[in-house]
View (spheres, rainbow, N blue to C red):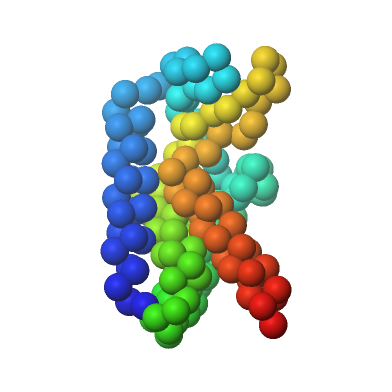
Length: 154
């Protein structure tokens, strides 16, 4: 389903546009309260999800660039080989690809990922994330949903 690659491009453009806006507007750790439970704030992540390996000394940058690139290539090939009836898988793959490439660009350009979406409840804060992370999460959820749906029909 090569026709779904446009969705990857949309995710990538939204991700990079929001990051450029945050970088141009906020100082690191500056907080703008949007809702009582939601902030915009500029933070950087040198690790992976939930800052995994963020204090690993620098090698993780190239590891995550390589891993993200490899996974993105595999997913593009998978997407291109899908049949027309596999739309949910295609949408999931396209979202993961766009998000992965968005975070790879950050690592190449800045050496770290720009995060800025922050949910919290009183003093309990969920790790900050970005549009790319949201697309990856939603894409993986769609892939899991399709897998569960397919398992029930077999």
